[in-house]
Length: 509
Image (cartoon, rainbow, N blue to C red):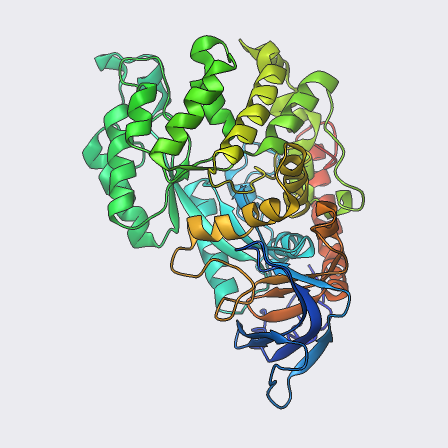
């Protein structure tokens, strides 16, 4: 693969087929003049401010003309523009160059994408193009996790441009024990699939030692193992964001038990919907569930756009369109997953599963539930479950923000959910992400007021990622420079499919 990346204002870098990536330049000094600042941690709106960025942090937020910029600081005209915290996707499954190794499609399993990381760079740039400067990956296979841990550290060291990554270790038990809890059917416990508290604790400790950022407990942990994973995570200072335990079997937790041993954050409003089905999703369950969430002091990532798109596929028998201009940014491997042959949500098996006809009711329940959670002050975060079919990396955050706006949150509350609340969940020692002195410079400069219309978060003038200024035009140029490698990958996938006799091309999901 051959590709060159356009020069950045402060971070010039060139990658070729024969050269390893050069480290990006260190963050410089920047002064944004006469900008409207929306800190997002309070209801304040600060007009006519000068904001100084030094060494990757906000050094000053001062009245216009009052900030003392060091000699050589570069200036950005902020007149008529709005500075907000960088956005965070609190629930995403990031594709990496390791994706083919974990693919269930034999046509692409083991496909070598080379050593230049063009694929990874393109995915990372998709986030930044949407103003997403942070992303919490919610767990995958061991090999894909290793890729993400490496990628996280490359970005942190300035050797790659991308959002701040938080990588979860998913800990789950064997499904067989949950569904058929007989002694002769339970696999031997091991930290990779624990069925005992001791192995659950060992799994958390191993994740801590490997450097994972948080733990994702999954629903097929039995009650004692679930409790052990949650409590050991808390003891070691690892946040938990995941699924509620399964109900209705001998080894399962009941609803009260799950709330007595709470996660820091519940990964879907749909998870709470599952806990409301005892009364067939009756409205009275909403109040009961909200009471339990409030008492247990958990946050929730509703992922409303996720369930909405699943319902669309169930009803329309096709993948919803991606927002205008973003379809071309979906990478070829993800396109292949979205195509009917690889898309579980378009399969007969999915459509014919028990309870499929309640998907629409479940979607309505999740929206009503999320509205009540918001009214009761439960911390909400913005998550998308990308790259679920139709949900592209980056822009899907805007889609979820619009869903939260539609159920009643104010634009400022939506911004807070998409930034401050996520930082408080995943990055307790790194600040709250607000536009305040001392906070890290992960910021978005907008050409229009997001408080007047939340859709204006799409009017991006540029992004600060770890203190580096990336004008929107430069991000677009870097993405365009990667187009040849993208086309080459598409051709390789097409050839692999033809060789395996599979129909279809790497197209839309």
